[in-house]
Length: 285
Image (cartoon, one colour):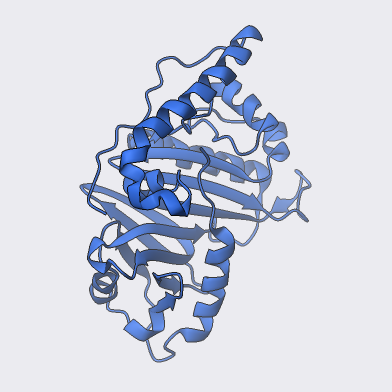
C-alpha cells in the first residue's frame, strides 16, 4: 500500500484559484478547517465569498481553497474531534469534498506552508525546525502509520530503509545528521491519530543544495479521514465495495510485509514488533 499523492492536481487547482479570488474581499489572517465539515460550512464560518473559493470538477469533487501571498503568510487550524492542530506560515489550503455527497463533508485537507517567515533558510536550521515540528506531533500523540505491506522499522533502521526506498515513511523519533539531511530529496512522515491520517511532506529547491548556504523548502500537510485513506487502497472500480474487500486486502498486504521483514531479519536488522497498525472505525460513506 502506498499513500496516494495528488500534489500535481492540487498545484493546478491552486494556480487557478489565484485568478478567481474576490478582489474586494479582505484577506483573512487565519482560517479553520475541519475534516468531515461540509464545505459550505467552511465558507460560512470563515466569512468567505462562496464563488471565490469553490471549484467544481467534472470528476464529482468540490475544492474549497484559499491562498496567501508570499509576503503575508497565513495560519490554518485543523480541527478533528477534540484535537486542534495549528500550522503557521501557510501559502495555501485546499479541502476536497464529494459533490454527490456534500453532507459527508470534506474528506481531505491539504495545507502548503513554509518552514519560516523567510523565503530561504539555512539547511541545518530547516533540519532542526522540522525535528521540532515532529517532536510536537509526537507529544500530541500522533503515531507512525506504516503501510500494511511495509516493514515495521523505527529509528535509524527506518531512515536507512528510506534511503533505499524513498516511498517509505520516515520515523517520527529520529533526527538525521546534516549530512543525512542533505541526502534527502522528497520525504514523507505518515502519521495517524483519532481516525485521521496525516502525511507530512517536505520538498526543497534543488538549485539550493549547498549546506553552507541557505535553501528553500515547502512543507505539505495532507490530512485524510480514515475512510478516505482506506478507500485509496483500492482501484476505483472496487471502491463501492471497499469495506467488504478490506479484510482480505489487509491479509494480502501483511503477507508482503512479512516477506520483507524476514529478509531484513536475515540481514540482522531489528523489526519493531511493538508497532501496532492503526485501529480505524468504519463510518458511513
